[in-house]
Image 1 (tube, rainbow, N blue to C red):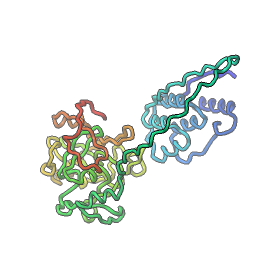
Image 2 (image 1 turned 60 degrees about the horizontal axis):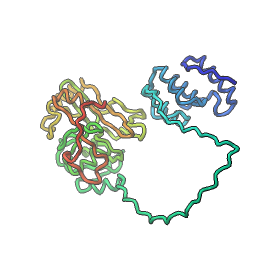
Image 3 (image 1 turned 135 degrees about the vertical axis):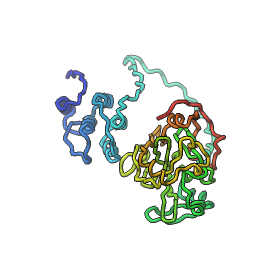
Image 4 (image 1 turned 30 degrees about the vertical axis):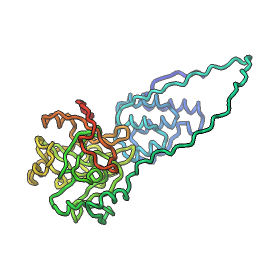
Length: 372
């Protein structure tokens, strides 16, 4: 049977014709275009991609169909998991969400040249006996993975572990008890721009744990740290107001999922407010963003209320090769409003179990481009 190649469109009649053709070729079975009831309410364009995938259509054709449709979809976590379970490729899911339908180039395997049937195969070559195998060498010990035990051993000297309703075992630094005005990502530290985005460089000996893992919440006894096991340069939400920048610690309800990113309320979180009110935020003038003692330049509460009401969210979260990146207000924006050239500092991912590494020990790249 001779098949005539044609381009896919989003018209239902063409898709119906494609399904009929595939049914004739493949017959009934998993590859046929059969009506199935979706367990989630998918948009029409996503349902079309699901039908093509079930029909066994190649990724190149599916990606061309998505590119031609010129539509993107804000898929929920449940929808992503459902499509993946139905056999839709990660490339197709990514293209549905971002509009990037560029296929991954692959190198074809070299063609195998058959040997003439009338040629006698050569005699097998002499194979010497194998040399004695060397004694195996034990691999170097891997760095210990983060766990509640490692957190307890490193944080206990600097605070107390307490039970917090709704969150379980949490840690409260001694400084938070001694100073009622203390707050995370604000006292005794400053911001640096890294290859993973904006990172909080803490002056506390426990800062490499509590400001790069877990979340913070304000309980009845004050600010407490809720353990978490994914690393980020800073777990914060950013806001921009004319002449000012503000930020707040992310709450425990902001959940990180590997391969998906940051989620809130069951959906992928981009520029959402995470339910954070004005009391969670601090604001400083743009000219004080680089200070190492930010508490001296914070805006009073009355002014914070006004700035918060007129501000907009600029979180700038993204995933880069499996790593969570926090662009926040953006490198170029901060360079513009603070009149300062910003160099990129190499982030130290998960360095808490090796002790705190001072900024001057890090490699610095002079990269003028914003990675947003």
